[in-house]
Length: 262
Image 1 (spheres, helix red, strand yellow):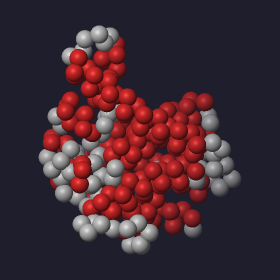
Image 2: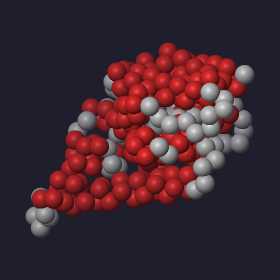
Image 3: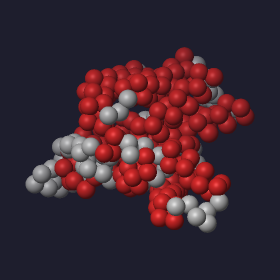
């Protein structure tokens, strides 16, 4: 029964998201449909396989990832970093880090779980995927209740709703694994990623202003590599890489006015 409820709920939200949100993301934000579909499919594959294994083997409490799970996790993380690199919804300074932290941590803990047979890490990795569902439920809840006030235009309140829902859903999903310390580690990782984005932004500006003088080639390579992966604030990313996703104005209810033309 639990498997049926989870699968039907997860797939319903995933199918709705695929049919309605993928075209919107592709049209408004110039996101690759291939990345979007791969991101959704790999997440569903991991989540369903884990719960199907629990259903067919109820006596087995220690579930370990299989090679397909590890590969799916790496593809999920790769597409997640690609999609969040130019994410403008919510408050980018605080909305992007939870996505980035999850994209970095999941393949690491999945691979460690596979190599050293640590089922608790696999459980955390799979639980993190539930944030996809929780975020949509939180957005729906806050959009249809008076707990977060709306502005006259509505855009600011929706942006705030998105900014609150994403980190809240991510932390809740990690906590759901019931693995001691997992949610604390995730919160600290998110804070670290936010700080990393600020550091890279500052270093990138310094490199542009000084034209690279007095900076070692290794530091330049590090900053350049992190920028390519998206670990930098959007305004600096727009200046450095000139991505078309950040050059054009975007009109979306979840995008704050201050970042519509970033």
